[in-house]
Length: 84
Length: 153
Image 1 (cartoon, rainbow over the protein chains, first blue to last red):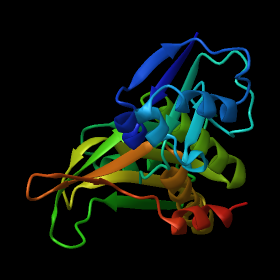
Image 2: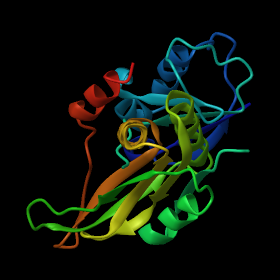
Image 3: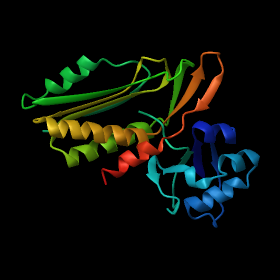
Image 4: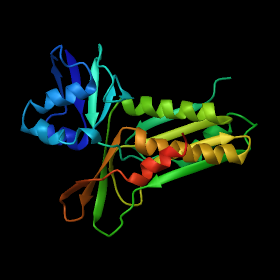
């Protein structure tokens, strides 16, 4: 079980701010995860339509799409940051 | 001596002089304090406010990581980073960077580095609230901000 958290327009398009899900063994990397989530419904498909723009953090630290999920407790998906 | 790093994520406004005094009074070796304040601006008269969303927990952690990186690169005597969230109207403060050092060049360069990294790495997102009451769009990330990061590699 991993906790997924979503921010900004990713959160809006998916329609929730967080959820706990079980991942199949075939989902090993962040790229796998994004592919897997796209199958969960239209909101996910729209939010993750262009996966290259989605930023991801594992356990509150930035990561790459090629990174392994391992035993991550929390994975966050969000658009490019616009603070400052 | 532990280096004073202060990072804060808050809804409330901050006071520039209070933050400068806190850094400068900690160490009499400090010869230079540089501050950068980012404000909410209204480009074409249609903006009522910006709503800033953030990732609680990671925002603080990432600001700590960015500050630590600056301390490794420059001989700094202190760094303060404050980022606000929530509704912020044009003219109000959004972000504060304060760097202190013996000499000005390190303080200037580090402040610039910190701002570039805050913009593209700290998990905050701005959304426009328009004067006609409508929720506007999410602010797009600028390519220029990404380019600004490259020069520190």
